[in-house]
Each structure stands twice: as structure tokens, then as C-alpha cells.
Image 1 (cartoon, rainbow, N blue to C red):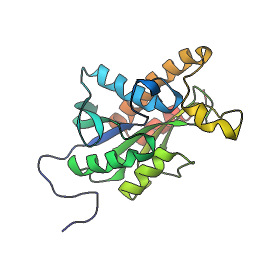
Image 2 (cartoon, rainbow, N blue to C red; image 1 turned 90 degrees about the vertical axis):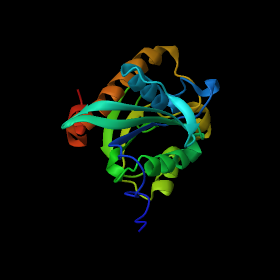
Image 3 (cartoon, rainbow, N blue to C red; image 1 turned 180 degrees about the vertical axis):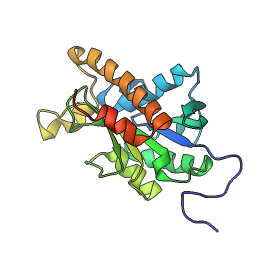
Length: 208
């Protein structure tokens, strides 16, 4: 019996996690504020000598393993190439293919306008805060209970330039700071998988 998107029966052993970095495809958008999630996914893949490959599910994907509380965890690292507003198409397809049983096994790495540049927060579920990538994922997986690693990119000076803001690269004075938070976000993903989201929230949501 089909019980919905999660827990569907399929071939092969289920994966333990999907980690999704949000952004837009193509060199034009690389290193922009909207694509910090992509940078985290690429760093996590590099740390494991894994290669992101296309061909299925409208995403670049690397299948790899992370250290977990009970040994190796099977993890799919993914960067949707659907453009931000359609990210859920890729995530929904991967949930089915990798037989993900719960939204709490999805980690989404995203840009966050409501946080200053360089700030990092870990969140379990919650609202969408006007983020089109999150809205698309929620529409496709029918849940907001997935985990988020939120990277601050700051708010634009005017509401009228919001789209321009997120599609622009960081100014040089911020880039070094963002490179640090990209590495911290990758560490946060690893900690969620190894120790749980509560431990990661305690570590990364506490003001230094």
C-alpha cells in the first residue's frame, strides 16, 4: 500500500540521509548569495573524495558515507539543478529513490536573509520565511519537518532589490567571512548526522 511520499517500498537498501544544498544551476550563479548551499554540498563531497554527478532526479548527486552514532551512515549529497523555485521536484524524486522514511532525514542547506552575513543557525522544521526553495520542497514532500542549516546572507537595503541581492556575489569584504561559515555549515551537517540535530543546535545556535 502506498502510504505517501515517505516510507515507500522500493528496490535496494534505504539511505539514512539526503543533504540538499539549494541554489541555481550554472556558472552565472556560482558563488552568489543564493548558492551558499551549493558551496556546502561541494565542500562535503570534496571532504569525502566524492564526485557530484548528474543524470537523475534533476540534481547533481554524490552517494557517500558519513560517520554516525552506529557506524557508517549512507548519505546522498545533492544540488538540485531545477532552479531554486523548483527545488522540491528534485527532493521529492530523491526521497522516493533513496527510500527516505521521514522528513527528519532530510537536511537542507540554505541562504537566509533574516540572518546577518556570516551567521549560522541549525533548525528542525518550522516556517518558510518567504524562501522559494523551501516552499517548493514543502509542497513536494508535504511536510515542513525537514532539518535546515541556515547561512546568513543579510537583507538588502530595499525590498525592491531583494532578487538582485540574492543573485549577486558577496562583496570582497564579506567573502572571507562567508568562506569560514561555509566550512562551519559543512561541519554542522556532519554533526547533525553524527550526534543529532539537538547537539548541532546547541553548538551552532549559541551566540559566541
